[in-house]
Image 1 (cartoon, each protein chain N blue to C red):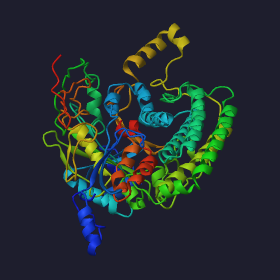
Image 2: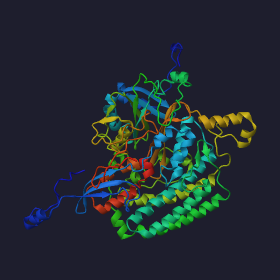
Image 3: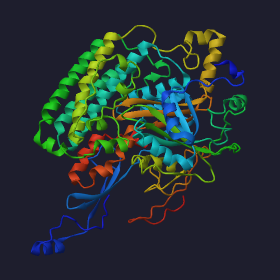
Image 4: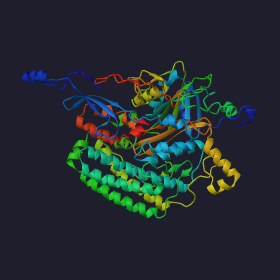
Length: 217
Length: 412
């Protein structure tokens, strides 16, 4: 910290080497970055995810060739990303305890101003062995994001799972279907507004060999 | 994936033979393989289109064992979710316990005592031995080699006896706690363990004699299920499958956690990236695990097995019943859980099938906002369709066996 800092802003702690490299390469694509608890994380806009992913994969010094995981987070009713808005969170912490829920009902918290979902990618490199987390915010009214299947074929199932659980559609995915649940399933279970004890309508079997419709009890 | 409607490209074109083929040619046969098939261990449905015995198109469906692990974790306190992790990979549950608890400790910033770290490695490597024996035994049985399966299941039982002695349960272990382990190892465990492991290793050696140079077994395994090392990485495959392709990516070596940095062990790698090399890598990892367990016993330090952190440790019972502060402490821990700091962590350990990662997002309360499990079986299963298409129907069985798909982990 130097004298001309005037105490206005404390000097930012030194960037970890990986984050510095990533920010050098990606430039303005990186909206935000953070290194906490030993993990390095960058945020990019969803329009830029394909470009960012391609640069992360193809740059010889980064070489993120192994896509470990694709998933999403539902920030329903939260003021912001828990990490980036700590002060607001701390002030509201007591009042933000989750509401007690009845078995089949959900008390929905109000929508926050920020995009509801975040799609999270975990990348690693088999050559340099570093791990990076990439996050993209995705709004609730248009839950779409470009698919990275063209870069890592292993993203195919991971994106299908994220679609199944959160309803986020991956544009350009070759085969975007539910992977764990059946096609007739209503809703997306890992969304925070899906009640844990919610019930699904009974689906009658209609394939070959189907019997007479089941009579009501 | 090729088009099932396409005509057989291998059909000869000359003279009467071509006419015979034209007359005899039938459309591809659609075969449903699973979800519960005697030649697969695990509930997965594979739809195959066959030209004779050749697979021309395939599709893999998972999800028959989906039971909402992640949703369930979001409604439980951190300490309540440990038993759910037993049910992920139920053939090596302690490794899952360790992965989950280490991720939570990373979030809380807890440093575990050294004796606990050694006990976790011992328990984890015992689980890995059991998992590899089960995988090899079951895969051999599916190739009609029944005797090695009996040997290896007996070896696995010996390992499960040790797990039983360590934590009181064979399969649903719940051994690891946040910040420690449930209990120290029992008296005389070292001698008991080494005797049992050596007995199991003689059984593995018997199976090795029956399998490794067996011409039938080798013909079924060699060259089948090939995936190039570049494809393995691109598809997100980890664990013995990736190492069989010559990529020495083992979390225990590249990001040493617990005490793996202090242990002397080798990372066996293959070169052909086929099913036989996957089998050999697993076989070579078995003596490595034994060596690690013996080293841990030699280096095992004294001291407590639980971190003394008020957010996660349970107060001593005598104090809870006689003192007010500890009673309040216990009450708050049970009803609210330990308050985690705000943040998100990803921590990965090397499970028996590959990289097992837990990604935990905390909103500062006693329950995780999100608890994601990066299951190795799921990513390892995703290229199965690519691996079996173009091969023979009989190759599906060893390829599936060597992926060692565990339904509980793949479908969560």
